[in-house]
Image 1 (cartoon, rainbow, N blue to C red):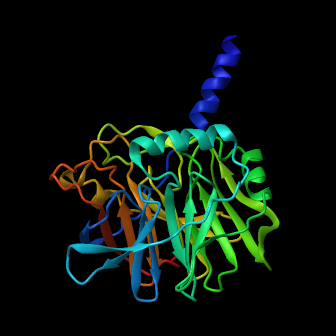
Image 2: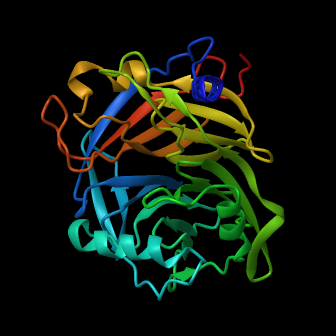
Length: 329
């Protein structure tokens, strides 16, 4: 019995990730409150040409174009008519819990990420349905026809098993024929599908990465503790996949073909300054765009106020790290 307990303790301890060296800190350039989002809860960001777009996980019938011409941004709603969502293979229990929660918080589809291809098509991931909606520049929106193997493989790898822990972000390549999805937590993971005529299917395998365990919140976090490893959003830049790792307060560069982590940068020093802190015991960043000059990171504050009283969604602009995003450690 004592030996079994000792082994259990060892396994628990070894599942906690503690970085040998702290990740370099990103430098904050600007901060923008966002007005005009009916449901608040900014949960994704994308850049289509010169325009920034966002979604709320409380709004099912509209997305938002961001007017960024002043320090406080204005969200301009764009209505979308959404067809009936397909059956992705998620079990009834998970879907029914989301349906019940929507009566309290709104947002039955639970939009959690948005991305754009070079043709201006916007892709929106629904966590509740484990499905992806395509919104073209002109014409009606439609759901991508995705192979049921995506959800089967993800669940077989230990992902998509928990309520409110399904798909949390997505990225699309410029050609619009390869899509990456981030499974949020317990287990977190990265998946990839490719367009094959009308069907989006696994390219040999869907799952690039499946990862369990916990990691410590940054030292700047009040009463820091170990939290589940998670992914909150994805961004594709210069052939690399960038993950927003919410509880670690980091942006990490990963191999787009394998999901293997290459380097991480922290934004904790700026995000966790006293006036910017929230009362929630976990990270709240949910949106990411990485470009040559830096990164946009958006906050879903769950309608909660910061220490300074700000209740609106926030988007931060960070400078690119010294040497650029391709820099080696």
